[in-house]
Image (cartoon, rainbow, N blue to C red):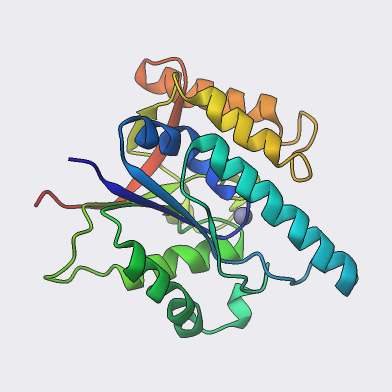
Length: 228
Ligand SMILES: [Zn+2]
């Protein structure tokens, strides 16, 4: 049976970094894949207002391109303020996100690891877990948390919040698509040894793969899994 997969992420590029290979694998299996960007509105980025709007357009164009490289549906942008999700109440974030997710009605969900350093990542995870709290009518089979280099590994406090994966997806056959999606974000990518460089992403996938005996993998935490 084909699944309806939703990747719910804060920023354009989080989906490619965190689960691009896995999403492409879902597409290859015949699943419908949706990507929702929660926080790419003009926020605390250093540009002036018009430059900020221009950068936003550029990021959204890159996101449309990246998502198409993975083979997902056209992305959904919610445009909440970037890097300032904590300035909104959790309820405001949920009110914006919930109608979109009700429409998609996913069976499998990917979102941020709840212990990331980045506040937007943490807020999105919390909103997703609240919206999809277990209910008798829920068709959600699984919620997985992904890692985002330059945020997940930078969490310095709360050892219990550190990313400890317990689900691995072999992405050896779709890693090229992940890289193609990341290349669409050339404005966000950096030169190695920055963690957001293609070489560092490949190094992580190699390490995650070797951990479980395959060439390249993406790693997740199982936030919830239900067999109906
Ligand atoms: Zn992000």
